[in-house]
Image (cartoon, rainbow over all chains, first blue to last red; front, side, top):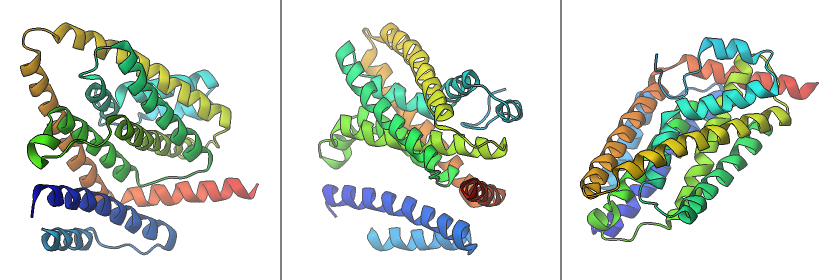
Length: 52
Length: 229
């Protein structure tokens, strides 16, 4: 992966991660449906692995 | 005793319950001065600025941005997870240090994004963080914020920011000299490391503090309740 693509991926991943975690928190607050933190981390980890 | 960024002392919560507008100004200033993630970001912003016009330009962009989110987000009861918003603020500190170290050119071979635009965007996020904290405190103190109280808090934030900037600018003027290159590299690495530390700390809070969800539920209930009257 060249540096420019790597940079774009990194920025995208950071934005996605924060949105994903905030989304999970909103679902928890609005619907009382709590997703385990470990599962969230695993999903993000898989996303990072695939992206890399 | 120094607390973590944005820990609000019990005494402040008690005082807020019957606070005057002056108290809100004081609380805003106190929050800015003791919230060292904001200070770290401001240090990063003004680090290489030596002309008064540049400082005015960047600080104005930051100020307009955080005023927008403090006032609108608080008035319309828009909140985010307090740990996540503080994590993004920590990320802004890392970003600024990285940019000051010329990291975009060095590691990605690209020019950094428009500097003033990024200060504006991060200003919006810092304001949102301040607003989220103000709303949490208002719920904890069982008060419904009026627009005047929000404005007063915002004025306090600006006073705090001016106080911080005067000190930071004086310190930066003192270190501008022969070894400024080395000092700037070292200082900006400290910004990056401090930002990473704060980011990890806030994310750890997000994943481990389960009482926070209950507090946020209380925040929502409080707002729902206040709208029904």
